[in-house]
Length: 282
Ligand SMILES: Cc1ncc(C[n+]2csc(CCOP(=O)(O)OP(=O)(O)O)c2C)c(N)n1
Image 1: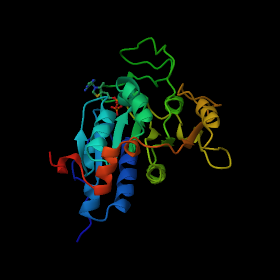
Image 2: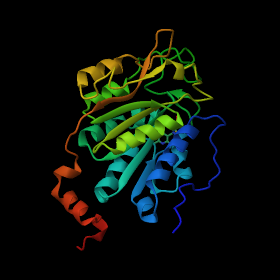
Image 3: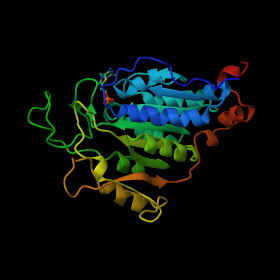
């Protein structure tokens, strides 16, 4: 039996040099090692909304839902509750996750369903031509903000820590980092928040972000300590970069907490029998 193809073969319409290519390649590499059989391919679902990032849905041969902007997480949660035996990956932009869908993000962290959520953070609404989101730095100018952004940025890592997310990580849009963090996330049961910092080659170009990053590891960080995680998260507030900027990457925080599935006997029953609601006779 041949290995299932996880490439849909669709023509890619991202801009040349877009960092979404790195995220796609990292996800495909990861899946390539996970999926050996058609049954394994069918056990994984993916969700994306609307935006440049969301086209990832067209390029990966998995079942799932291409949902509406800002609603990636409720869709992931619906899939997981409908069939808790599925492994679910959600892909959102910063506009989707931190502006339009922000209430879902907070509650998804609290619910703690075993879902992996990947935020492509290019710090703009790219597909609609570069309007600022809640993580765009002060002073950023485009047509809707000719005088420059005046609002302070939101810090999503701090937000996720406050909302009790049990796995909080940030990486750069680099194929190796994506593959690594997906492997790490797989080991954790519960809601996994992974932010990917990515320049937008058209509307928020690279100003040397990657050079400002460093990795968190067991020598410089204790990822079981929420106060230390908050401190590390405070090192960069998404407010641009200058000579002093240091952007920590890696796993900020990990906490083992009961998942939503583990606390509901109906979902437990489905998981034990390896069934979905659809298989239940009414
Ligand atoms: C419910 C809804 N609101 C707004 C839009 C308009 N819209 C489409 S794409 C987009 C920007 C997406 O930005 P982001 O989520 O940051 O993704 P990116 O394009 O930067 O990858 C917006 C505002 C929409 N299609 N649907």
